[in-house]
Image 1 (tube, rainbow, N blue to C red):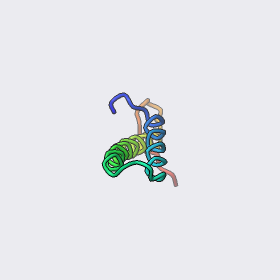
Image 2 (image 1 turned 90 degrees about the horizontal axis):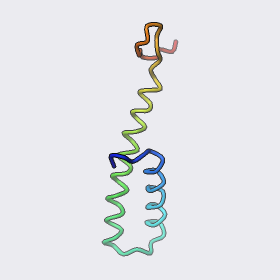
Image 3 (image 1 turned 90 degrees about the vertical axis):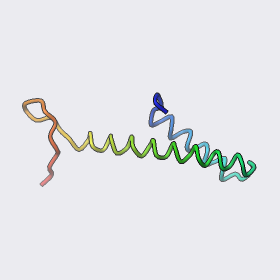
Length: 71
């Protein structure tokens, strides 16, 4: 998943969920799909946490990132 984007991972995750909800795949394939979905979910979670950290920072006058403090 090194070159994966958040958007492509999310699309794959949505596709897997639809397949699993459909219920027309056998048990072994369902387990494989579930494992893949778990990996995609973890990847998306890490990307979102990273994006949140980035958004929660702003550049100060010296060009350094500082935590955004809302009062």
